[in-house]
Amino acid sequence: MAPIPTVFGLLRSARLVFPLSLLLTAVLTGCGVTLYGLFNGGLGPVSVGLLALACLLALLGLLLAAFQLKRQLLKPLVTLGASVAQVSQGEPGATLPDTDTGVLSGMVRDIDSISEELMELYEDMDSRIARHTTRLAQKTASLKILYDVAATINQEENLDALLVRFLRVLKEMVNGLAVSARVVQEDGRMRLVGTIGLDDRMRREEELLPLEICSCGVPLSPGDVLCTNEARCCVRELGHTMFGPDEVELVEVPLEYHGDTLGVYRIYVKRPGVTEREDILELLETIGSHLGMAIAKQRSDQEARRLSILEERNALAHELHDSLAQTLASLRFQVRMLEDALEEDGACEVARRDLQRIRNGMDEAHTELRDLLTSFRTPVDGRGLAVALEKLVERFGAETGIATYFQQECQQVKLSSSEEMQMLRIVQEALANIRKHAGAHTVRVLLTCRGGSYQLLVEDDGVGFEGGARDGHPGEHIGLSIMEERARRLGGELKIESEPGEGTRVELYYQPKQRPRDSRPQWGA
Image 1 (cartoon, helix red, strand yellow):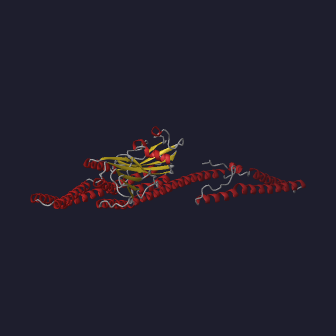
Image 2 (tube, one colour):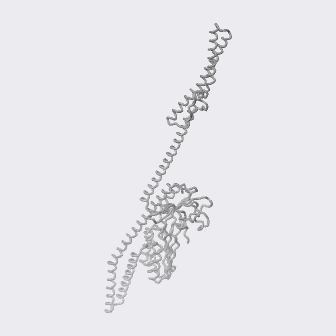
Image 3 (cartoon, helix red, strand yellow):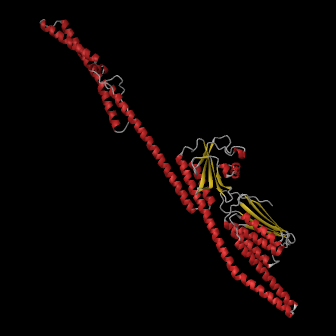
């Protein structure tokens, strides 16, 4: 605070010393001239002139004093009052009078200092309000995203569609360059579900990398979001960076449930990225936990459905074994007794041939029932379609003595248990037809996967049949109809090609309806 000035200091700062001095000089001069005239009996011409000059000087002093009072005191005081009123009404930064040497200079400096402090307080308060408003908006957006995640988990039945739906959400959340989603399969390998912002080359490279190589960032805490400053972690595997020389930061969001990693989102962002954004990292971690729970829930539901189907099939197998199988066994025993009786009685050749035909039919029915019971009790297990087909082909070759070969060109089989079951049943029916009617020496079963579509091929070198007539044997006709019905139920396309003496070729083409990317394959001839 400025020190209290003296009277002379106030007069000097107000520039009133000269006008007051002039006025005082005029007054003293007028008083002196008047006293001189009183003591000398009157005023002479010189005295009158001096008295007039004193009056002029007094008038000039008054005018100068009034001008300086108005300029240095009254006008600044009015302006200062208005500025103080503005500050008191909540308008810091109001314009103060520019009086560096005036009588109000000290007061102006003090008020100006107070105004600056108020301005700083207001700015700090505004910045705090802006930060809190931004954080509140971010929290609101985060809650909306989490609500969408929770709502989608309860509505979406297809896991791939669920994960692909949030690719764009995560990309926009962190303003990323690209994002990909991968899930862990039952064999421990990572399957690429979908991508945004990656070209075909980078998508293929993403699909090739296993989890332990791609999770190359340093975890902020156990189970937390993974980050690395530069996306160069896969150079040793690919030979180059996925985004070239650009400085890119990699953020990996693990999809976890009870400590198990079920998948991962990989987000590529420009540096500096989101490493310092704790709120974003917490939101990503929460989204990962929710989606991990969704993956675990869907897999649990699939396993429950599979176990329910197994239970129903086992119950049906037991019912068939306890009813129809026992009846067939009893009939076979009675036929053997009848055959022995006819041999003793010397029955005619016609009766023996009819009896042999009946016996062969019952043996065939018994074999089919046994195969049916076996297939009911050994459906597709948790290891997938390829393993089930391999076991089926091995058992067929061992039972028939036919040279049977199984080949697969699939890195990943992405089918539900019901889809795998229908495809397995079509192969079973094709092999059953080969066993009964083909007279083949060699059988080949081929499973091919391309671009999300599947091709099953069963071919033999048996007797074959005429183009589409299928009129050679009623059992064969029924078997082909069963395969076509299963293909329609699956939503696939079944092609059967055969020529007499050239064997038979059964092909099934199937593409699941809901795919993250539309990529229809081009099958070879």
